[in-house]
Structures are given as structure tokens and as C-alpha cells.
Image (cartoon, rainbow, N blue to C red):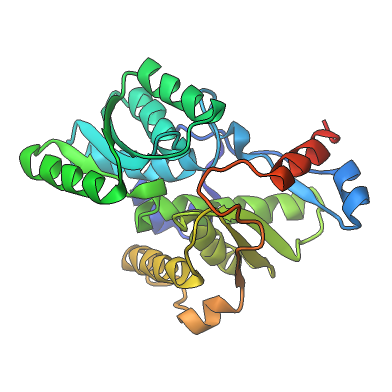
Length: 288
């Protein structure tokens, strides 16, 4: 794992000391067939391999959060999501690597093979799994658990706390370095999934601090709005500036200029498979 590039520019942030669980930098490469089919230059940064056991965007956040768990001498992490939550599974896997227990509070999600496979993996990695029929009941159970268990540490949905979001501030610095060293064109837009908002917020702050002139496009996986991203971005900036005052402050109005949230690709329900989504997968598979 390479030294966090964010720390090279702002050395005081090294105090955050993320766990070394992320394989970085993750590779970036062009999707030649997809680009030709769509008439645009499309590149992908493969965060699917951020961790050997289970990749995706969550390990970048969990590296920072789990270090805080250990600093606070907690022994169990608690989080929540749908039955097939990728975040919950990533938390379970990452917690096991850090010798921590994991309790995941799951609420209803339409079953499909992906959901079943994630639930089986949760069980395989020794997660404590608690089901509720809706989010309200889940919240009540978590609040009760936190009051009764002094060794429990709560991780918000998607790992999207200000601390977790720092992982994607660094990801933008990683991308900026690759653009420079690999002579890659600066992207006009960066598309990422937008659920809990941490990935969008981190890339939004990080791209500005790293000098990438681009727009972050958050593709909604359930209905939220850009204010969610902007609020989290401000909270993350506040966290970073408490440690390193030399980091510039930006208003929500300034940040909004570099952010777009779209529901154009939303299938109407979280985690649902759509015909258009399947077609997009087949198109990208043409690039191997």
C-alpha cells in the first residue's frame, strides 16, 4: 500500500492513521469498446480490488473508521443496511481483519441472488445478524444496543461519517497523481453511485484540494438530494481543518458548482435489477 497522498500535502493528517487494509492505488484504464459505442472517452478506476477479500468503495472509508474503533478500545462495530448490503458485508470482512466483532442490523430488501450471496458471506465471516422489517425498527434496536453495550461503536449507513469520508478525499489525490504520472486526460465528469453520500462528498472535496477541475456526478441508488452530499462535505472539511488549519474552507455554494446529482438511472427501488442496468453491464463486459 502506498503512502496516503493526502498526507503528503497535509502531513498533520497522518494522526488519523488509517488501517493498512486498502490496496492502493487502484488501477485506472480506458473502456475502449464502451467509449466507441457511446461516443465518449470513458475511463474506469477499478475500486473493485480495494481489498483482497471484498472490494468496492467501502474499505477506503472503513480504514479510517476502524482505526478510531481501536483507538477508543471498542470491541464490536455495529452498522445497518438492507438484507444484501454491500456496506454491511464490507464492514464484517474488515472488522474480522482488525480482530473486531461485527453486528449488522438488516432491514427488508427484495431478494435476489446477490442479496442471498451477501447474506451467506455475512454468516461465513461470523457476523451477528439482526433483522427488522423496516428502518424505524432497526434504528430502535441499534439505539437500545448502544445504550446497553459500552464496547459497541456505531458506523453510519455506508460508512458515511466525516471520518469515513476522508478515505475518498484521499482517493481524489490518488486519481490526481495518476492523471499526472500516466498522462491521463483530466475527466470532465466523475460518475459514482450516490447512496449515503460519503463517496461523492469525499471526491468533491478531494478533487478541489488536489486541483482536479472536474464535476462529481452522484447517481442515485435511492432518493436523496445534493444537500446530503454538501452537508457531509462541510462536516468532513471541518474535521480536516481542526487537524490542519491550512486546508481551505469552502462554502456549500462554492462546492455545489462541482456537484451534480441525478435520478436518471434510478430503478425506482433500492437494489433492484433493471433492464437498462443489465444492458450497461453487458456493454462494459465487452471491454473484458
